[in-house]
Image (cartoon, rainbow, N blue to C red):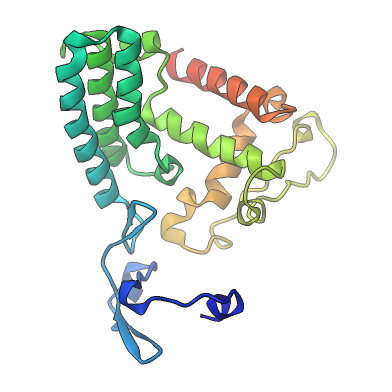
Length: 252
């Protein structure tokens, strides 16, 4: 509320929802937030910028909604397949289907494989529609031919791009504040290329989501990159090198 007043904004209490993100034990407590005399009960699920959030940040409802919506659009795309050239079909597929998988997909880093698999099934189906492959054909060669990274690697790509932007003043300050250089005890070859410090379990705010936090996931992925990629001098060069490196990791 103080931030709202300082920026001459007024909070619309009729549209305000409250989500308590905490350990499961704390969520069993009865908590009632009151603002300007209006009681705001805790919600089990809220939508922020189109993303469904839950108290445990498991994003199960979000994944289900994305997969369901993408499959619905894919059925329409399949009906257009006989009438479009492959290049046009690829454009439509990306605009209506795969773009939904990529939207805010950095949030999916570290999710259980059962959740990622639901999104991967959408991408697999889209790849088969675009390539004309049958259901029984193995999906890996199809994705490789289309030059599509799987959902798991697309998530890593998004996190790494956000990390590069944050480190080079191209991203929001609140992300840069969560990244800190790793100070080596002595100068070694591995200390070159701006390695980042990975917070310990005790230093993470929520132990249940520690491995998925940007302050933990981003440094881990960043430190795994070759020095030549971490030292890229532009976002364009970085994106190209990272995608090539992830492509090698995925299909080698």
